[in-house]
Length: 71
Image 1 (spheres, rainbow, N blue to C red):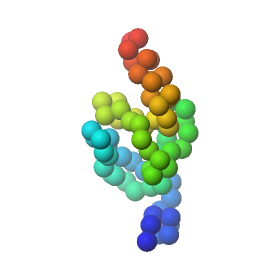
Image 2 (image 1 turned 60 degrees about the vertical axis):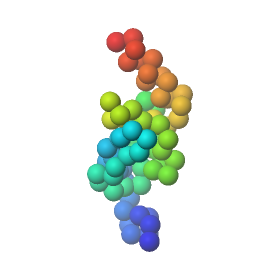
Image 3 (image 1 turned 45 degrees about the vertical axis):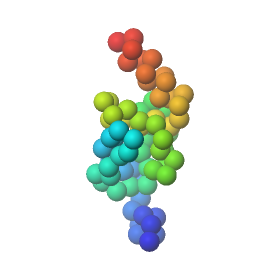
Image 4 (image 1 turned 90 degrees about the vertical axis):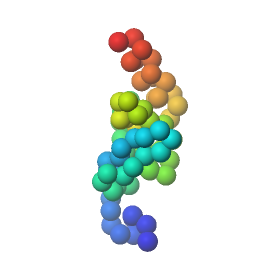
C-alpha cells in the first residue's frame, strides 16, 4: 500500500543528505525553494544539503547556486 492509498497527502518534511534523503514527516511532495512548485517525492532529483532545500529541476538548482555565490 502506498502513501496515496493510506490517505497521506500534503507536503513531506525531509532531511536532505548526500545522494539521498530521509523522510522526517511523510507526505506526497516537497516545495521547490526557488519556483514554489510542488515536487512529487518520486521526481525529486535536486537538493542542497547545506541549505536543506529542494529544487524542481537543474535550472532552479543553478539559479540558487548563482544567488548564494553572489552573497
